[in-house]
Length: 309
Image (cartoon, rainbow, N blue to C red; front, side):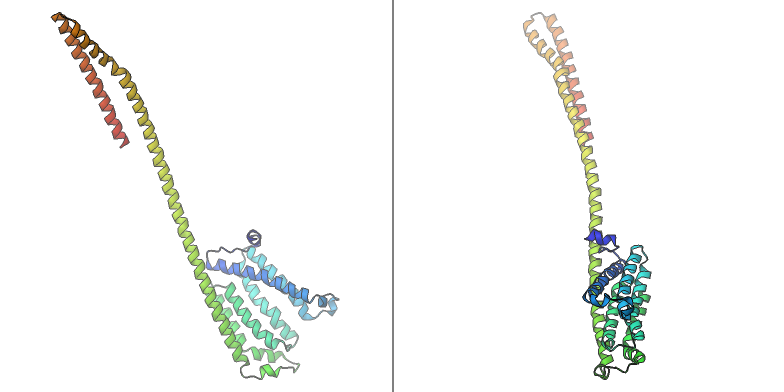
């Protein structure tokens, strides 16, 4: 479902305020046509007649649907300012002002028009950013509020049928109630949107922090892998040295050691002093040779320990 909506330009993971407003506007552009299509299906019999017999207001619903689809397409091609301004201007014009002017203020508009103004103000808050687009936001909100203040004057100005519902307009609180409800819904909407924005921003901040920590962990892991590989190479080299030492012990030390052992045994068998003297000389040489081999081994071991440390 998320992939399908994304193909229409709708995303839910925008990381900035404008991106979230565009996402909200996409949802509005998609939801309103669905609602209006249901409305047309409920009233389908009135549409199944010759075009010349259709009422003026029946043409407005398909036009609004077309406007929503067009604005959705504009958002998809990144014309987001145009799409949102176009929609927020055309929606009240098509659904309220044109019918009021053309139909001479139908009686039901004394109730529908104030409700439409309130809904229009909520749409403004949804699809425009107060922080990033302050001029557009406050300009549209002020115009919307002034429309609510003069709602009765607008309705009466275009009402030529003398069918004013006095039960509504005759009440001194007709306009005041509309203003109070306008304030109530807008303040609640403003608070909810502000809370949602802060919540999303905290999530995005946490996501960025996690991403940074993940990158740091990746760097540490690569460094650790490099150190492990380097240490492994050193250990392999040390193992090779140990194997060399074993070979050294088995072959190079064995020669002088065996000679020393043989000369000692031979010395016990010889009675001639001259021969004993020669054996002692040879024994001394073999011991010196053995000592030299041991010294060489010690030097190799010491150098290997320095490399490992």
